[in-house]
Length: 231
Ligand code: CA
Image (cartoon, rainbow, N blue to C red; front, side, top):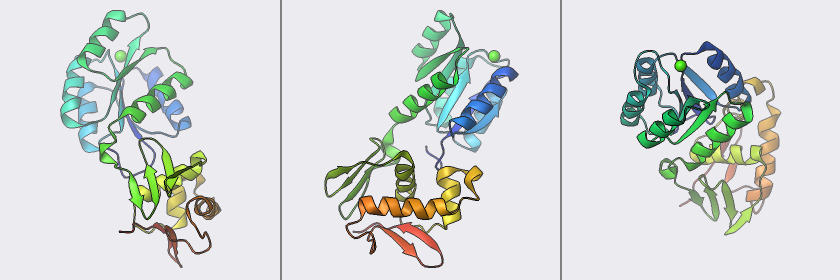
């Protein structure tokens, strides 16, 4: 289940501090939020407390058999699971895949491999939680990352799409510009309030028939912005 916040939450179940340190840095670069658990039981508690969007599960955990953790994870959350295994541990990989992990990463892995795996499983994750947003000729297909206006696809930059996706998932809710910057770009951009204004204008130019008199992405004077759902 996706959290309310825009940046995906990764639950890392890993006891090796070297990998914890590496993953902490890499996931920040990849614009993921991360929570860390050093044992399988701690990981299960975290998964229940704050359901992650994806789980990175070390196959060699100190307290319990990792595949038991996998079974329990499946009971408490819907997130895809990427197993982390030692390179060459073909038997471990085979057992993990048989047990139903969504993908695996062989240690040591680099930043690009990590981000590619995470994005791949998030991409494949069931989109059921987020049916497409459709309102008065505007369609935002979250699973396909596609925006259409009157049936025609609209090309968008990554930031434009993230802003529109966030507003579409939170339709009819008004966000202050600072809130939007925090949700879409992250707290490190907190001082950059004009980002919201600039990108709202760009998105309007792409989705509105009359950008100066918007029908979808509306300004609430003195408050902020809202994506309205018509019909
Ligand atoms: Ca380990």
